[in-house]
Every structure is written in C-alpha cells, then in structure tokens.
Image 1: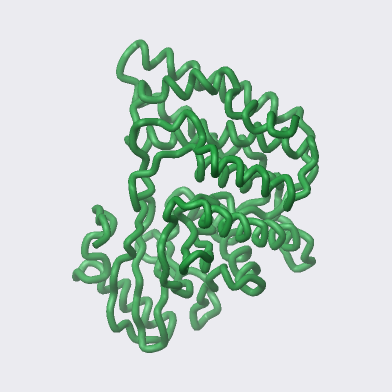
Image 2 (image 1 turned 90 degrees about the horizontal axis):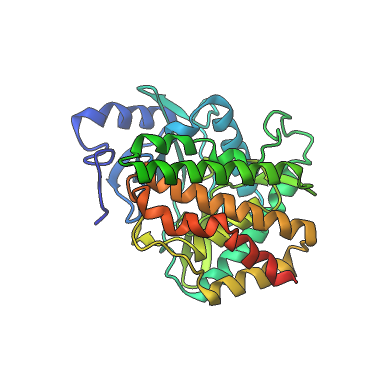
Amino acid sequence: MANLNKHDVLFLKSNKYIELANLIEKEYGFKILSIEFPEFISFTSRKAIIHTNQGVYFLKEKPKYSDDKMSRKKSALFQTYASNRLEIVPKILTTKDNKYYIPWKGRYFFLSDYKKGRTYNGSDSDVRSMLLALKQLNSCGRDFIKEKATPPEVIKKIDSYEVATLVPLIEKYIKSDSEKETYDRIIRIFESLKKEYIVLPKTEYLMSHSDFIVFNLIFDNNKVIAVNDFDNAKCLPNTHDLAEFLVSATMLNYNGSVTNMKLPLILEPDKSKFSIILDYYTKEFALDVLDFKLLSLVAEIVWAWTLCLSVLKEDYSISDLIPAVNLLEKRYLSKLIFGTQN
C-alpha cells in the first residue's frame, strides 16, 4: 500500500474528485474502470494509475513549481520527442482536441502510458542500467535542440546554478543564532559556486531531463523500462543530468520508497557506485577536462541544493546540514570527482 498523504487520500474516489474523473473520460474518450495508487509516491503532485476500457495509464498532476505555460510546453514537447525515439520514455496521451494537459480547478493533469515495474533496488546492476538510460536520453536531448521544428523559446539556455534559486527560502526555518550562522554559510557557499560557474566555459548545452534521479526510473528485472517525470525539462549544460544522477545515486539517504530524505546525512559517497558512474562517464560520454571540471562544480550545486530542498520539505533541520556544510566549504565533493581525472 502506498504511503498516502493529504494530496492523495481517496483521490478520484470521493465525490470531491468525481468531476475530474468525468472530465478525463470526456477529454480522452474512454471509460475509467478502476483506480489505484502507485507504490512509489512523492509529495509534490497527485498521481494515480487508471485502468480504462482502452488501456492502463499513469495520471499525473503538474507540480505547482512547474505548471506555468512555458514549463508545461518544455516537458510535453521533450517527452513526446523522446518517447518517439526511445522505448524507455512513456508516451504522453493527447486529448481528443490534441492537447497535452487538462486544466481542473487551477491545476493541470496529463496521462502517459503506464509501465509496470519496480523502483531502484540499490544494486550496482541497477546503476549500470540507469547509466545506459542516461546516455540514451542525453543523446536524445542533443538531437532535440537541433530539430528545426523545436521552438526557440523551449531551448533557451538555462544555467545549473539557477536550479537553486529557492535556497534563501530556508531562512524561515532558522530556529537559533547558530542556525542563522549556518544559513549565512550556505548562502556564501552558493554565491561562491555561482561565481565560479559563471566564469567556467560551457562546451555544450542540450535538452535535459533535469530530475534524473534514481526514483524517477522504473525497472523490469535488471533493465530500465521507463524514465518518468519530465516536469523539470530544460536546456542545460551537457553535464547537468550526469551530476544529478551521480549525487542521487551516491550522496543521498532516501526514506525508502518515498522521495523524502532521512538521517544521517551521507558524507562519503558509496565507493562502488561512485567508481562505476565516473568510469562510465569517462568512457561513454567523451567528457574532456573542462566538462569534468563543470561536472564537479554542478555536482556540488546539486548536492547543496538538494540538502536545502530537504529543509524546505522538513526532512532536515538547518542544524542537520552542518557536517555537509563543512565539506561544501572545503569543496570536498568537487575535489573527489575531479581528482579521478588527475
């Protein structure tokens, strides 16, 4: 049974949501037979598996942080493009009016093909499978920005430090003078990372998934069968997804099948997975020295931002971050990554 929360309880089964169920049937032209919840959930948007007379589909709500018009356009166009070229990317369904989304009570919902499988089991073989999926998606993102039909506004370049623009919001969680001091240290760290990032050459931008983490992939045996959640898709440096995956697979302590974090903080990466990933990057992504330098820097940004995001989700207190802040000030992770190339 899924760990349900206030967003999910009785979703589409109560009178409150029967209006949405009716709207879905009208917009897509099928009959809903039954509804179930996925075993794996997140707390940012509603999700459900709907069984219809025309097949089984995954229903997802666009999270509030990415439901603006441009974000909807980026994620739908890139997922559609990728799904037409890669079996591992589920196709988004279009309504009878050829629309990707259906609006309801100020929120946006969409359907995609449902692929039944399991989530990440922590094995090295799963890591290798995800690396292959990442390489395929990376290549697809490179082709996407070269397509003449791709709207220019969709592939407007975004820089990796911009994913962390909400860091100052953790200020509201300060509970003591010592936490205020830790908060100030975190802000200085991000300012320093941004300053270094800006002057570092970027060799290539491509359309990126921008949330390529272990829990957004579905497996069947030892093979990735689905890459989900294109909500954050945007044109980023070619190492961005690589950095996000490296951090999510080696530096984060997940709370089981839920996307929240738990203590203790991971301060030393899993050596086996860390080695597998960096070795694969070196051999399969043809990264040069500048690329690896950028990868190292972006990994620091992603790790620091994810820890701050966990404060916003109330997984960690600001005080909990102190051991990681100590290492971030010493550029520990960056040195660890870039050191593999020296």
